[in-house]
Amino acid sequence: MKFGISADHASFPERAKARLSSSTYKAPSDSEESTDEYEAAVIEPSDSEDSFYYASDEEIPSRTKTKAGPPKTATEQRELTEAMASVKLHTEYQDPLEAWIKQNQQEAFQIAQNRMKRSHITMRNLYMTATQITQTSMDVSAQEQQRDVERVIRARQSERERQERLEQERWEARNKALWEHVDKAAAIVEARLEAERQAEEAKRRQAEAEARRIEEEKQKRLQAEQQAREKAEAEKRRIAEEKARAAEEEKKRVAAEKAAEEKERLEAEAKQQREKEALSKFEAERKRAGLSTPREDWDRALEIMQNVKHGHLKRVKEDSVARRQWNGIRRNVTLRIGQLTDNDSEVARISTQIFELVRVLDPSTDIYPAALSALAKAIVLQAETEVTAKLDTAGPLAAVVINLFNLPGFDEVLWSRMVTRTGGWVIGHFVTKRQGQNDAEFRKLAGYREDETQVDRQTRIGGVISLYFAICTSPKATSMLPTPFWPTKIWSFLSRIMGDARLTRQSMAPYLMHSCLEMAAGTGLAMFGRQWLKLLIALGQSSMEEGRMGASDDAGKTARVRLQLRAEKLLGEAGVMGSAR
Image (cartoon, rainbow, N blue to C red; front, side, top):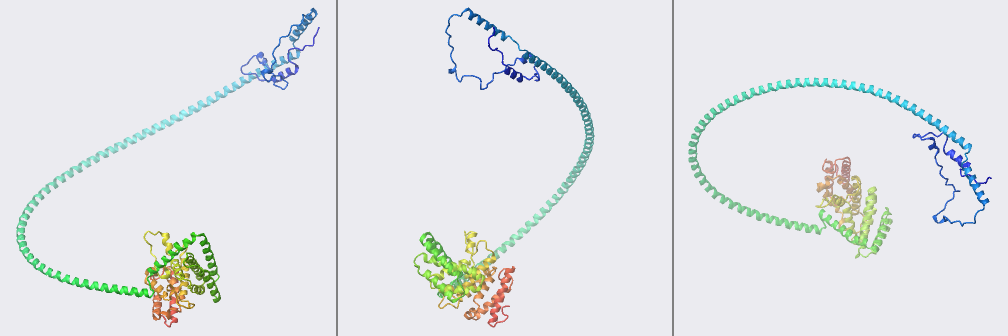
């Protein structure tokens, strides 16, 4: 009787998967395991999705003891026995296909293993052959290298033997020369000793002769000293007598000299007192006449500018309200000055506008001198640019300045601005470096500007000079000009420069004096008369002498020629011909 119970061995798909996982043509391992061990590989269970497992130990159901049922009948017992026999029969059954596949796998494995053994033997034979060939080549190369080394050693040994022979020969030659030198030195020493002995002998004989001579001279000297003492005593008595007479005469002479010195001292004190009184009188007259020295003018200009800049202007800039008012005045003044043309009505209009703009300010406040400083700066800048480019613009600008002299204090502020801006050239003063003053401060004080060439500085200062003397000589003045702008400043300017060699030898001196003559052409003769002509002659002659005026470069020569021609032209207009040469 047969029952439908499946066998315990694997199904066909699982057996096919096992056959694929162990290829028939797989190469055997080096351990050369047996065919049975090779076939005993266990196929791991698959982790496919169909595999059943519990997520945790709690899910594993516990075994429950089956309740004993009723006793089986004989028929049931017989069926159970037959079923167990059928199961046992199925488990011992062997599939012919699987047996054939297993046999083929064993045969294929045996063939592959034999091929691998033959391949290993062939490779080992090839390796041994290559090793023998390499070893033979290495032996041959080693023998050749050994022969080369032996050949080099023999060559080195031969060279060493040759060097030793040469060294031996040189040593013998040196030893021979050394002994020859020793023999010569010994002969020289013996000759020197003999010469020294003979010299000592000659010196001894000479010393004996010298001793005899000294003794004789000593006797003579003693006799001479005795005679000299006697003579000296007589001379001493004579000198004492003469000294007594000389002392008496010296006493008389000293008394006479003291009397003469006292007389000279009294006369010198009287002369010094007269000179002091004359100087005081001159200083008083000079001050009454409004004259001053260049140093006094320079110190006064610096004092005015320092008072304005570091006093009034500084306080205005610190006050926001006053600063805005001052900026507005400064912009309006600059605008009006820039609009100036050579027209009388325009000159009057602009003068009036500027005058009214500043007049309304209270002179007792800081804003008033600050506004005067801004006005003076705008005028000086206009002179440095416009007057430098076109000399005719100096006249209208001078007319505006003269009209603005009605503003109290404006003349001094403008004059000090011109003096400091030109580095003292307006007043003919040479600026010197003070103790403790650095180069930057000195250059700024002397009128230099940053990144300014010598030509630019010369033309800039020339424009200010032209404006200054245009003011001094302007026909627009209806009343007396302020003291800093008197026409006599023309003479002061020229005479101060010519009287100070430090100014005369500077390159811009002839250029600035020419600018002065351009403005003062029609005023100098009428004001100074023949002295003006003498001054023009001196200018012309100085400009002709090399090294006396200006620089020696081309620009300096050009300035001197222009000054000379201008002086000659003015002399010609005055009826004096050829005197400048």
